[in-house]
Image (cartoon, rainbow, N blue to C red; front, side):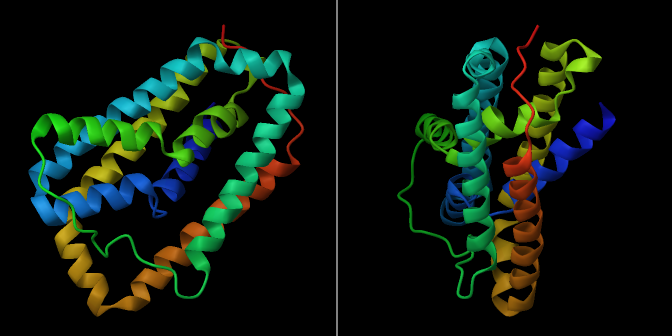
Length: 213
């Protein structure tokens, strides 16, 4: 189980550090409207993580356990998406998430709902919960539901903490990276390598989905 927790933590870290809808929105919101607005938006993202975890534990994986072809298809789709993310991380001329997009100022309620919607519609999070998280569950250990909750909680903790650090340091990081582009390339190559490795592992895995119980 410890290996699974470390594994999901690493893949969660790699995914959260790869520019995607959540990071781009949170960075842009923090730079254009301030840290407080970024953190409010992050609470919506946190709820989105929780919704995905609850849905996964309450039966979505059962569908894949009884329809193996659907599970295999989702794993291959997830592997392809991770490879796409890895390529976008390392390809020449890739854009940095710390180039803020102009956003209109919004009230707290709208910030929360936009953060939630951004997370729920984020394909990275859907792939993470529906096809990656089950890879770290060991049926021989029993208590699949508890394993799912533990693994999901690690993902939520990593995703929330890293995003919170990004929110509170967005302005400083943007200025730092603008002066030192080498660090942007380092971040891109490291995350691209991590995601590529997990994509290959996922595509070659032959395990079946397990039902939470």
